[in-house]
Image (cartoon, rainbow, N blue to C red; front, side, top):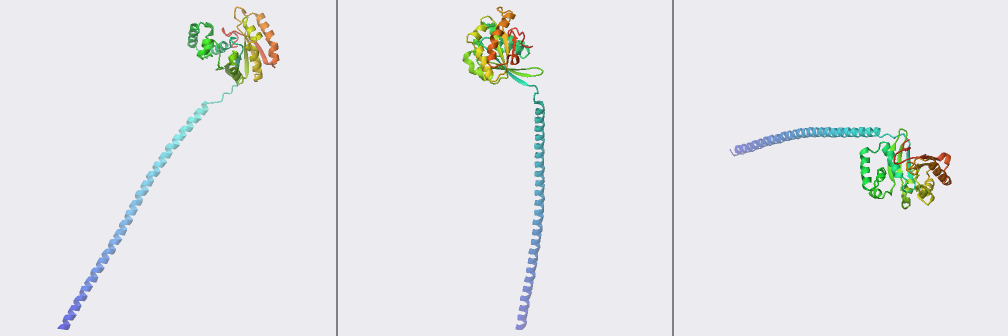
Length: 293
């Protein structure tokens, strides 16, 4: 009986071990299956994440492409605008000349310049009427055309040009810039700065009795301006004998010829070729005769 009990006990222990081993195998099997499932799930999650990232990348790529498209459109618009402006800004083929008006103070330089602009249509009637009123208030009714060039109040008040006036006009064949130089001896530096820019000089001489003599024969600026113009490289000179409409002249041919005869030797002594480089013309800066043609 004792041996049988031992055997029974031994058998029961072995059965328990076998049962435990079976249970262990089941547990291991369960663990393995869980690991496989987890691994598969992780792989599925990674695949899903990858797809999401790819989708995001695709969206960003589309956004970038769209932004690039916008920039490209903007660049195209800018280029088109620049091309249009460039097409509009064409170089004017007409030659350009700077013309400086020089001469003794009160010879009528500013009036002649202003009347040229008015005759050519660069100043309207309304503006002229305004200048006429201003000149009348200053008791200088004949100065109204000079106000076109003399824009400084000090110049208008005193009737003397201080700074070099500047204006532009053009014809069918040429473009011009008018430079209105001061005639007073105190402003010679300003006259020089203007003459240094000029291609052609217009020497304004007053034909009024006593004014020509003051400007040329009695140490006036007619001589100095002529010499400075030649020294500064103005090789062509128009001598405009102004105020021929004045009662002391009344378009007298003898007065015109007398002035021309007296001034010609000096102009020649300054280095001008009278026959090629100098042109004489009688004018009236106030009435406009012989200014535009």
